[in-house]
Amino acid sequence: MAADLLHWYDRHARALPWRVPPDGGRADPYRVWLSEVMLQQTTVAAVKDYFHRFTARWPTVQDLAAAEDGDVMAEWAGLGYYARARNLLKCARAVAARGAFPDTRAGLQELPGIGPYTSAAIAAIAFDRTETVVDGNVERVMARMFDEHTPLPAAKPVLTDYAARLTPDQRPGDYAQAVMDLGATICTPRNPACGICPWRGPCAARANGTAADLPRKTPKAAKPVRFGIAYIGRRADGAWLLERRPPEGLLGGTLGWPGTDWATTDPVDAPPIPADWRALDAEVRHTFTHFHLRLSLRVARLPMDTPGQFLPDAQFRPADLPTLMRKAHALAAPELGA
DNA sequence: TACTCGTGGGT
DNA sequence: TACCCAAGAGT
Image (cartoon, rainbow, N blue to C red):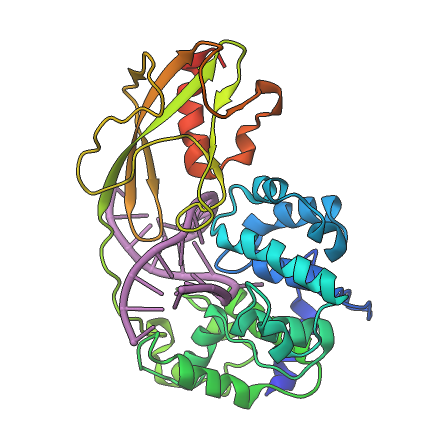
């Protein structure tokens, strides 16, 4: 069964920057690790440019380990789930200190930001270990192959067991990528292309006509709306009033505009410094994983003797901000002569 | 176990 | 528009 999938993969593998060349080039553990962390809960299309920028700027794990925290956070800005960037640096420094990546799944999983999926992926792809990767694609493929109706996430252990049963001991890295590619291109969440699937023969859901209904998932809670105010201040010399957010929690470690907490009740105006703050009519609407945010904006031109942390205009790039803060800047900048 | 943690694209 | 979804990890 695995041979059928590998045969399909050999003919349909997509050209992705982090792939091992099909003619036998060696997988670079650093690039495999970097790509897998970036791909956590993130689409291939979103990752591509980030991967190229990171590898161009930091070609080895030693280079990344020596980078400044703020530079890495700025380079990651816009990709989301910023704990990944914080853990990326921790992991790079741990690997640089020990000399190289561990070459076993257990060793890899001790590192920050490397969990059950990523450890298996690196071990299989970079070190040719027979390990089973279980991501969202694999869960969906296994739920259909075995017509498993138990809803996720409760079904995860059985789906993992199914996946392990099918894993071959030849070409484990290619096989891992093949199952994920199958899920991404054929065994898709909606309208699966069962007619051209290399596993259409053994697939139980295909036989039972249930493929499109699997995997089942427990319903998610509705997202509440939260409200807040952000203050975009600019000094007479063009410098911007910005702050580094605390290293834990939402947008932890990223650069952003000072502001109120985000609560389900109307925010109380609380400027970071006294000034002639002016409210903008437009608000930023942004959706996070578990709530919607409506962010009101205040802008002010600030005198040169204003206390606080200012970033000179020449060093300020909106692209260094997370998307929410970038949206706020886009609305406020025209009001501040930028 | 269940929750937290971003963002952009597809339908 | 309002969902759903994406190569999950940490707590």
